[in-house]
Image 1 (spheres, rainbow, N blue to C red):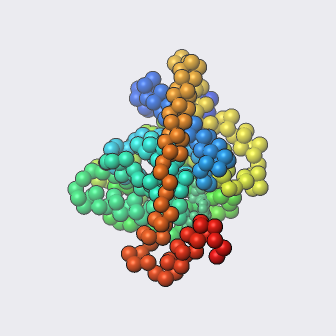
Image 2 (cartoon, rainbow, N blue to C red; image 1 turned 30 degrees about the horizontal axis):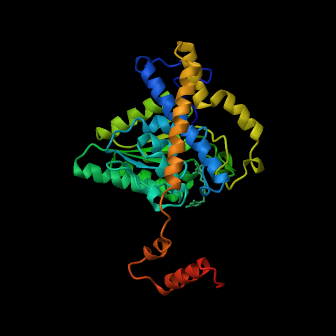
Image 3 (cartoon, rainbow, N blue to C red; image 1 turned 180 degrees about the vertical axis):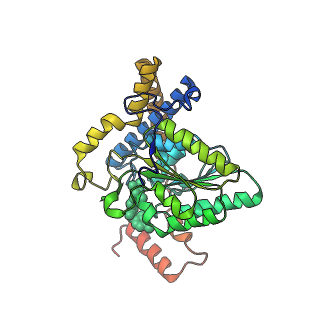
Length: 356
Ligand SMILES: Cc1ncc(C[n+]2csc(CCOP(=O)(O)OP(=O)(O)O)c2C)c(N)n1
């Protein structure tokens, strides 16, 4: 099966161009654009993990290592398309138009963090695993029925492919030829469970065979392989030729979330070793060096801009008016049940410092 789904690569870990099919499309402008987006996302990711440690936001799910998979795929979308992310896909939502402060507000537990900018179809991050796949298929089908050429993309991890919703989403999309791209980030683990302990399938891409849809496997740390393969799948969906399952093989360098300790289940030295050859940002730096277009000064300038932009977003997030605690109780049912009323009363009296 691995032979039938070879990992597609355009630039290898040392920064060599190994597939020249898209050679002329890899312009200096595109290189710098994708690199900047990845650096911006990485800067946000590191800042968010620090903010959590300082108690300024809640639990956070880092994505360092997965920037190429997310930035490459999201860059292939057009305005008006639909994005269905998980809790780990902020590089994708940022690339597709979410603001930095909105992403931070989400991790502060604010409902405002789920609201996309005007005209951008970005769903709130799915925390239940795989539930967003049938949603993505449904939205794609709705667009098809309306006669538009908009498409959906659903993001999910390797663990999600063991859930019923993954299979329902793919089956439905296959039967009704929905214009949807199922974008899997195979980062090797579902929290602490390595992929070998979770499934006997050798690849995620091969799961496309059951639904008779196209399946491809790409190096998820090669931003160009991801970008061009996703573009192909999106164009195919837009033309009415149905769904595709993309498996982007990647690795998360950090913890599952800030509430998790990867040293308990994973060899961290191996992870650090992997970074030397697979880091998606280093790969582009090496490629640019070989092309003679890399300048440390340019990187320092981009890094500085990203940091300033993120610092501004943190100020914006922290200046946000205090949430109304009534909201979490008042929007459950139209008429609150006695249990909700009781919970609300208990919570408010606790806030007043009374013993319950
Ligand atoms: C329906 C459901 N079951 C269990 C969980 C608990 N849970 C949270 S994250 C996670 C692992 C998900 O792994 P994967 O799909 O590979 O995504 P990753 O976190 O690696 O990006 C699980 C089981 C959940 N959130 N939802």
